Every structure is written in C-alpha cells, then in structure tokens.
Amino acid sequence: MTIKHQGICGVVTAPDGHVVATHSDFERQGYGGFSLKEAQTIRVREGLKRAFLRVFLFQGLTSKTSGYFCDQFWENAMEHGYRMETFSIGYEVAA
Image (cartoon, rainbow, N blue to C red; front, side, top):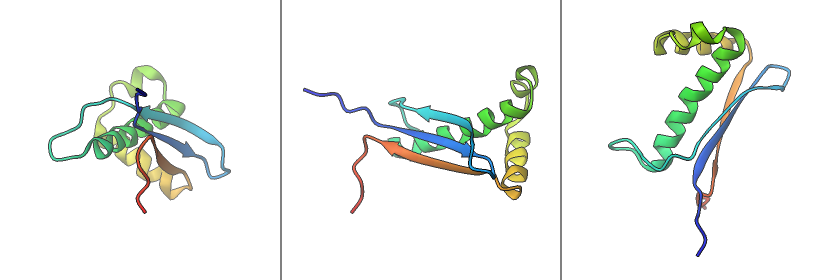
C-alpha cells in the first residue's frame, strides 16, 4: 500500500523571474465548508505573503504584523510586478 501525499506548494517571483519566497502545506485538516485542497491553498497563499514579508522586514517585525498589513504589503508588491503561483502535489488533474 502506498501513502498518497497531497498538498499545495507555492512560490513568489520577482519581476525579473527570480523566486523570492516559497511555502507549502501538506497538513491533513481542512476548514469548515472547504475541501482539503482549498484549505491547503488558502494556508499556502497566506504563508507566501508572510514569507514574502520576511524577505523585506526583519523577523521581530513580521511576527507582529497584522493580516491586513501583510495583505496591503502584498497588494503593493503585485502592482510592482511580483507574482504568486500555487500548484498541487498528489491531487488528480481535472480533465
């Protein structure tokens, strides 16, 4: 019997294409009303924003920032060419 690992991975790329942050989630618990894949994707997107923030701010500050600040920081970064991509591991591909 093989164990199927299912999770979501993600990267943030700079305008020049270099990867500046990564995050993944292979946790097996979901959120109420969301599939496991959707819950993992939500956690990865939030984790990517935090990882991206840590690239530019020191850890003591990033651990105390609000979700709102993190979202605003990310929105500004997208306006300057940063992109976030997520991809699944171990999930069936929809035809």
